[in-house]
Image 1 (cartoon, protein in one colour):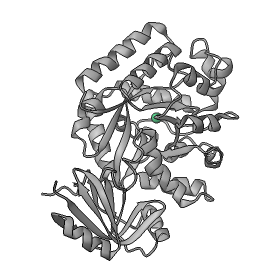
Image 2: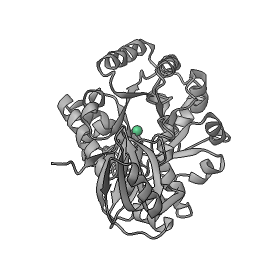
Image 3: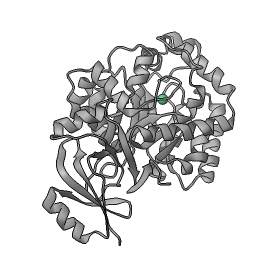
Image 4: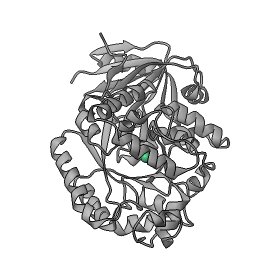
Length: 405
Ligand SMILES: [Zn+2]
């Protein structure tokens, strides 16, 4: 098997592992060995069939965007902003109804390209229109089409929601797939149970919007609050109990937002191996109180980062999300943020050890940052530094940006 040796002035293999003068031996799209230091590089060069020196750059794992809705890029600039979540939902539904299939597909393609330019190499994309499933094979990064299901607690809509997803599964079997029962307040327990069975049978990851607003928490537990007028009878269960009852509280599971955890819930999430996904740009869009990273970290939870969509965010740049998160939680260690954007996202997709790190056996997905660093601390800082550009992005050991002419 032919082996490529890629060398660089510095490598950040994971947030806690750094080396100056190193290289990655790559075969069949995976990292087969890491050479740390000049001696190891010389030995690896003896085994390699080809060597490429990327020069004065820092190599670091590709980012994993754990939550996006690329199709909603078609709505950019046409949605409400601010604290009134209901007004935003109404503006999304109205704008979405005016979009064509071609516009959703173009948004997925544009969004995937923009993500790649910010160093994202894997992305969990909520697919409500089927656009990601149709276009997914053409995007330049690893895209999981997380098929969205919802029936608004209306049993007459349950079978139709399932049938729609089954049809899409048949048409896109080559794709990396997952499932996204939208949220405990929009999905009936019956539909949630069916999705749990489907995901388990297909060993697919699941993503659920969970505990985003106080209003949904209130309606789920007691049937009260402003959502009572819009929704049917409440399950009178917390969102996490609803997930557990359905058989969904098991890895790989992404719980998206998690702004209002109840007592003991972060510990339950940690025990289940589920991941809480925070979307800093979207959080800022709605003017929310600071996300409580520490509460989850204290409980031993794994966190991941997402961009959410261009209907509630200004960009799909995960480095910007990292900067926003850092500004909102200044006491956090930089390693904790970088972990969320790499190995945390990998865990949310059930891809720990495959994505988000440069270790033997992992997929060779990484970016080359145009900077000179002399320590691990400088490397971590460079990844967030707006002044440091990305020179190239590699997916499966092949250059995905800029594309060879
Ligand atoms: Zn979302």
